[in-house]
Figure (cartoon, rainbow, N blue to C red):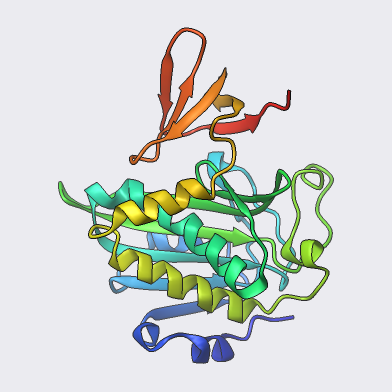
Length: 256
């Protein structure tokens, strides 16, 4: 079913009624569109019902059937460079809490910002940055959520699931997205003044802390105990010989 953009706009809280919104039946990538666009206001939302070249982290293809899921990007201008690491925290938190509040479903955050259920991915997030000057950056936050899709390509079907598969009901995408945005911009407003609350909430919803994990970083795999995720968003891994910090990578929890 096509995303109802007019109905969606009526669901937004008053403080978001003026946000710039663009909707596409089909586009190559909402992130790519915003990265190349120069003239948006301070905040913009771009929604697509289908992406022909959707992508996730590590430039992996993002698979999504038309009209079934949520694929959107939030564009922010003039973000303080000091706040860039915090955006990963608030993005995954906003989606996790919106799903919990609207659907009574608790997903876990897998560092840095995937949302999973029983080790299967429900949501992926891709944050891309363009530095504007020594203090500010333009940031594009791409979010893909498996909402009502029930079949996946063979290469990802064992690693992916959707809200519909988990709950056995059709999900209203417009209501869910409006709640995500409401929470996201509430967190944006306190990103500097009350970051500690955001950080502790994020950690409480993360999976893997205190467990044995492997970290794929570049072409290398490191194994140890995931001891912490620090306030800069780095994963801290205790190996037999040292403590290593990672600002990116992919983790796998090792079942023992």
